[in-house]
Amino acid sequence: MSAAVETNDLGRNFGPRTALSGVTLSIRAGEMFALLGPNGSGKTTLFRILSTLLVPGAGTARVGGCDVVGEAMAVRHQIGVVFQSPALDPQLTVAENLRWAGNLYGLRGGELVVRARAAAEALGVSDRWADRVQSLSGGLQRRVEIAKCLLPRPRVLLLDEPSTGLDPAAREGLRATLERVRRDSEVTVVMTTHLLEEAERCDRVAILHRGRLVACETPAELRGRSGTDVAVVSGPEPEALAARVREIFGWPLLVRGERLRVEVPAGGEAAGRLVSALGAAADSVTVGRPTLEDVFLDLTGEPLCGEEER
Image 1: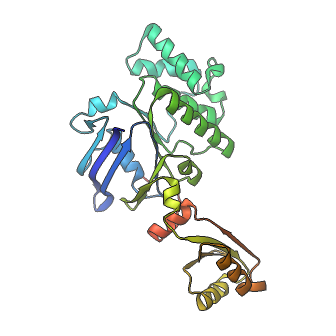
Image 2: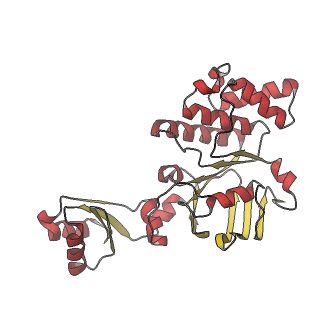
Image 3: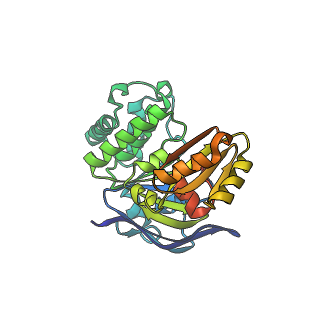
């Protein structure tokens, strides 16, 4: 399958700060692809480069085979971009926002009406066609944002933190809608996110940390990197619990607040030994397979947290 987006040794600095360094990626056409990372990881810098808003300081980036610097206009003809900050006029109706956006894309007349109706239908907001945007929920407003970007029929849809500010139900509804749009419109979806559940639903996840690409695999492959399970131990004296685990087992662990995160050998036997060793000193012990958060912690030594970077 051909690549919809490619970067090679991509880098960018802001003064003395390195925002991206040596990032090489290949995103296949038709993928749902996540750029996962916390504040300062570089994912928004990469997003801005791919959307031609920022010139790379080193390396190259191509969208649909076109260079983002030398062929920026050709790239813009192939992408739809949804920024983290809202770009709708709340006083206008859904129809008026779509027509206004269509005019900016150079669409007019009957062709614009057909595309606007189709985009509204695809995003599930056609029944709110005549409603002012300010009357819509946050989730519906986000759908209208995406509908705008489908008007030029892009090959690649770039989404910057698409679920920011949405409740869990709205996030799930948006995810299902994006999956349907990807399938029906044959569009590649590339999103930045710091939300684990959002990344989990993607075909592949690129983990960024301090401007560097540390992994790029399917969620299952990332979770399968570790041969361990993860035990979360709660108790009134987590440091004492940690000392006991170190003394008896020597397993890798991390104290986080009142909880202890312990990497235990996969299988129930090790978990049972841990429960027996801690006894009444632990209020609870839960054991499960590693999550993407566990993978991130293992790869970077830091927890995945925080909001979007500059």
